[in-house]
Image 1: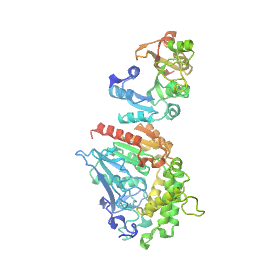
Image 2 (image 1 turned 45 degrees about the vertical axis):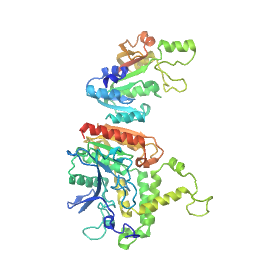
Image 3 (image 1 turned 180 degrees about the vertical axis):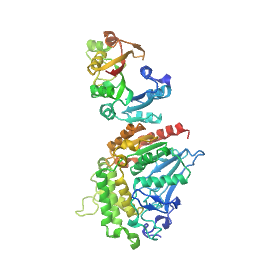
Image 4 (image 1 turned 120 degrees about the horizontal axis):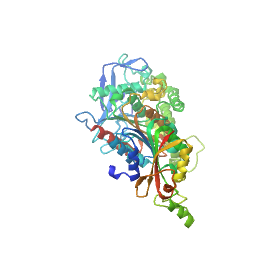
Length: 203
Length: 386
């Protein structure tokens, strides 16, 4: 099962300490939670919007709440989890700042992964063709995309700073799922990385 | 027997096959302080109990349900009320699980209730029957499980009032429940819930044939009142959208309105049919008692108003299911329970099924509900090797 885990999820799994209480917001079919539970003894809970994915989680024996990151995080008490995870979802929320605020409040640490709209191919696509960019990671048209709040790595780093979150570590992601450590504030990853994973802690 | 009203006598005496029944000489002490003795519990089982007794699934029925969850009703001949969910190869698979369903305390299908003969007087209880609660119903079920030698159930499952019993099981007997599936329910009856029940009760008690609850002694039954109660309640089980889709303003076997009070509209005819069909299989006093039990249900009240405390000892894995168009037990109420369970650190999943069929959806063909329950039970069974 571990072998089947998407590389970016595997990278997130690396960041989670053994036996932690974990809330995976937008947990999909529960692949990450299952790996965390079987290999790290994590007490994991999920939130997921799609009925089909919720059923997949339930069938795996994973506790999952069908719900919406935009509306349901307020119900969770502060500090209830060791780690709150939001993977490849923040760009699809209606209010990313509020969602991030809740995650930082609920989890003692927060792991966020996101696509980087500052990648050079995205910039080039808009600059050269004058059309809204479509990439391997962002396949939608401007009119049907669920990704309504795209940002660059630099944008996210700025927001995290504004919200008093400390970036404990950051990984650059490429489209093949390879990860490498990056300095979040440097300009390089913001041009070269397809995405990023941040481990945050509220100061 | 033919042609005679069915509930002038207890159902068991009418010759109807009520399935199995166990009579306990031990008195059951109720929440109201009174006792019932002897207590009879009528029940059905499906499937086979395995050697280590780890595959028992208790199904709790709703207000007007009974023990015939997956087999034909002895009075109406209709299929079991949940035979889409329970049976061989069904989500609650009787090839794999031993399913038990008992008629609730206060019911009228063989379990002790107001229509049954009181030992002390030799006459039907009528309104001398003590008020029972959801917790009393669960106590009676626990006595049944004791008698069957089943210490722990793999799952306790039910919708609506059945879901209330499921929550009560988890709160009252946390050590006896491996998993719990409350569907389309709440941890308390709302003012609106109570209001609709009161309309139904008043309809019954306003029927001259009710005779202060002593109709069995007079050879009558408050059929009109009970039918109206059922009609009013039935509206609450459906959504506005489903009513519009099924009936709209369609006329019943006529080209134009009759300028009278006959059943011009299909919806009227449908409701009248629901009412009339109901009185053939249900006792009016039972309806009073069971609706009251639901009204009194407030799981948090037993725990200083903190629902999470009710589940403090809960060891079960929970699966809660609600339906988008259910306005009787809306998603918010089900979620309220889920959050209380989360706050008590229970292991809980929550699913909201999209449907326009209202509260009744839990009894209908809802593939997503079936898939969820099937997957959940399978994972629970695997986790305990059942």
